[in-house]
Image (tube, rainbow, N blue to C red; front, side, top):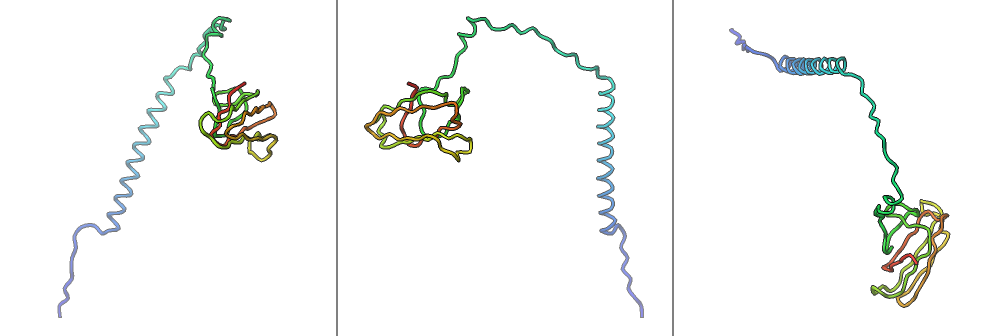
Length: 153
């Protein structure tokens, strides 16, 4: 009886994976060494930054008055933070003059917190009414619903 023995020349699957993993680690090690040495040499040769000092002139009264200021013409449906910045509603008195755009009913609510948990003032206006609303510094958010347009007045 003779046994047939198969002979395979080459690498096993385990040997192939070992070479792939070892080669990948070696490539990353070389890249890391090159990157690290370049960074170290750049840091060693770099001089400390020199602080920039510039004289900034203060604006004159004439320059201050020519600065354009964004002015909101009307507030409508949405939430507005009370303040003087861009997109905010400033404290003051606002007017809704009734049915200019065909709305039927609109309301407003002022809150004492930014989470809109504590309403402190509210009101509504119908299609033929004229209504005033006052926003104070104590208000944090003013929320409008509907299509009414509120203008400073």
